[in-house]
Length: 99
Image (tube, rainbow, N blue to C red; front, side, top):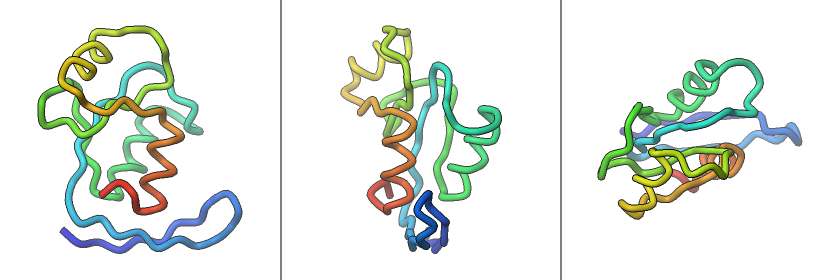
């Protein structure tokens, strides 16, 4: 999969982003993204990101803003899956670091 997207960041600068393969993420805890969780999921799916309900060995990232050790957090840690904040994930996604 090789899609090109243009997005407008907070500084009103257009950034080109190429997604070469699907990234699988799990989201846990509350989000700060404007709107509802579904809006955040729709946004990241535009970039080819797959969202799953459960942490598994093929999960690429656990997205959380919480410091509470949830079951998903503990499992991601046990499987050595990167645990990343919502903002850091979005910055990496928009800057083409997550592919």
